Image 1: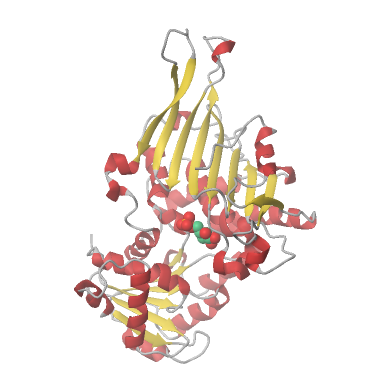
Image 2 (image 1 turned 180 degrees about the vertical axis):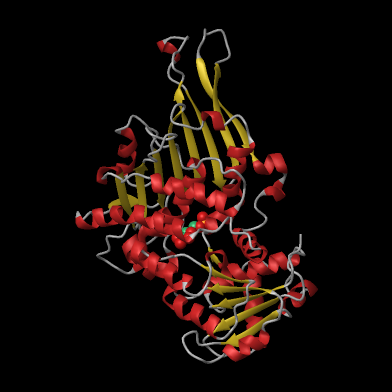
Length: 477
Ligand code: BG6
């Protein structure tokens, strides 16, 4: 369904995010017929260039990151909507030109793809130059602060100029098709929800494994680490969707209220329930310290921890979270491990069997339910676990594999004014309030991350974390 024509201004229009994600996403929505002609994409940046040069820059980005229509008519039609304005975000230059580019009676979205320390100046300038209408939205990216105090400051800065319902804080995991599917699976089916509590669920594992390293973002990453880069936001959001109560309806505040309750119910994490790791070089690939260029870095590129949601539903059911770079595979999976049957009528010899629901978020999206059956043959009542396996690609066709990337969906939601998949200010703050003492705890204790091999499942201590509880991680594959 096409949206109404809109104006989107990208501050940081020549930056990496614009090139890799925002511009290709807009183009794909245009190609799909969702972004109407009459819309405008205005790149804004500090350095001078003409609109023609900027169009060439955009074309290159499309070729590199997702255009199948190189040089074609659709591409030309899209490029015709693209404009450029040179703006100094902290100064006076360029605002009048921007005002001249903006169209009346349009939804306006300002994408803050600039350093967070510029957010305040940017928000203030947009207002003081009269460029904000009631239909104006601003979009901000992570990192949204690097602790509670900085997140509160950012929220206060933005709130001085915009209403909460105009602020769209992106966590791109929420834009992933399969992440939204978590809600459909939980709340669209009768069979899971009655079992979805500590009476039936032994524990939950959330794994977001990456095979890539830190890449060119060493500077940022070495200050952040896996806790701030992934756990505080993406894994926390997954945890919320898995653990939250059913909202009364699928509406932004109903959903976000329930997520917030989960974050607020998270108990403190015991220091011995945290394992931090750092990958070592292996001859072919550089280790973490070489990659970030900091030989004395104690930043973690891997973290595993055991969390507790202290509420009626989940008391006694731990949630184990882990994420890391340069692991054996790229794989995001949520495993819900059910308890053993309370009594085995088949006797000790039949062994212990527990149902397992695996929700694969990426790649090879799908669901597997492990069920116990009789091992065929005359050997008596021997039990064996088999998978009921469903791959979305097989069930729904190859096109079901998120043809729409997270950014496409999220940008269109900004234009439609739907905040369901965006983080509210209080959610972000609550997430930091949980994260801060964990980080200050290991900092004060002088914790040193454990080395792990590139291509492994992380440091051995993470296995111990489970083993001590008589449990084990499901494989990363
Ligand atoms: C980003 C992190 O938010 O998410 C990166 O900053 C990480 O470090 C990325 O690689 C992972 O996203 P995806 O969509 O590839 O799972």
